[in-house]
Length: 584
Image 1 (cartoon, rainbow, N blue to C red):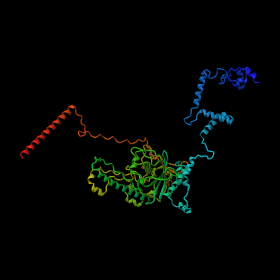
Image 2 (image 1 turned 120 degrees about the vertical axis):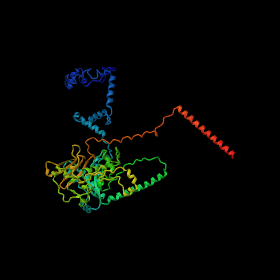
Image 3 (image 1 turned 120 degrees about the horizontal axis):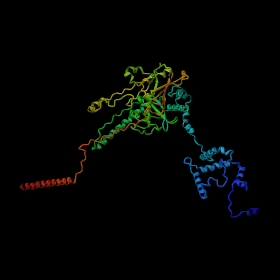
Image 4 (image 1 turned 60 degrees about the vertical axis):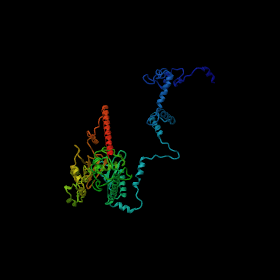
């Protein structure tokens, strides 16, 4: 059967592979056969003439088979290059795509080739699950819900008694109501976050002996944010803590004095000490007064523990005015700046809170008033007053009046002086005993410092200085479409992110921002101090020049002559002594 066909073939003759259209029509015109199978090609179309010998795109470029194989290898090597992003290569990706197409054989594969490519890529990065126990991925929303789960849990026991206490008077502020009013002007957080902060403040009040509490605002950070609560303790609670701290400080000072005395006894011969006296340290204001009137707690997210910020020092406020740093969200992070900041990020955050509160906490005029008892005692038109009370006869102004004039708003937080305190203190003032003991040192002290006097409490906003051509405040209603139900909104241009609202007898202040003061120019750090001058040159410290050889020889000769003369004098004295002994 196969011999007749095999007899026609030469066993030593090589057989070349034939294309589809060659096997389709043996002995016919190949172009006609190709036209019957695929239809005619026009001369302008790309497929015209490709079946004819010598028309291959590689025939005229790479005629040598070895060169053609090298080109194929180079092309394959290029396809095998791995991506620096995903680690995949195009060769394997195309192979997987073709395998998927041949296995599934979808209809109109050319139309969904992009989707097939995406599916193949997605399968490469899909997490491999164990058939016995799957490892389910923990979503970020689930982790956040686990952190805030404790906010929604009530303490065990109590029942109706706890419910009655919660319904009664409580220092917990109505955060949702405040958020509603600010939302009228497009200011605030989402409802979910506001409610979580509401629950977090409730948890804080249940742990700390707090008399008043207020949601101060939110300061943004590079890594995490700060949610800030402004509180006041019950009378006596904060004082006990400060007394303990003072006792510890005094004990530390006494121990240090004893150690200094021992060191002075041990080291009698010491090099001369510098006579430079650093400027006196300005003491901080007592808790409950001035810049430390309120206590502040912070947390990064609702559900995380609240952290109490330390009291602010005047030196920290003074330095905070000279630097501009972004917060990281970590209270223990160092503050690298010039001038060097005396503390870490917790102290810097506390200083910025004090500055923002002093400049942006405002209230409608007439809502607060000074006590009648203090009116006769205080001087200088209320410049020394630091307390006020609510006015029971307060009559709210209309929204139009609150927006048209800034005289209808006043500051109810004391201004911070350049010294870093709200009440000026003379650092060189001494007691009567010290004045008697140190009369001599008094003459050397500098002249008396001029007392700083800031604007008094309840000063109208119309007296605030603007920033070049920008007013300090911008007032506007929450809506112009329904003015009868509008809310008066004030925005601080000096501290971007500080807002206040007033609606009837209700008002509040809030801050959302980076904690930076606006400056029309770019922030320029302070320059380092000038280089210290060199010690004045004089003959007593000037180094002598080296002597020449002649001078050295002359010095040696003079020295030898002096020694010889001294020896002769000694010999003469010995001879005289011997003669006196002989005479005796």
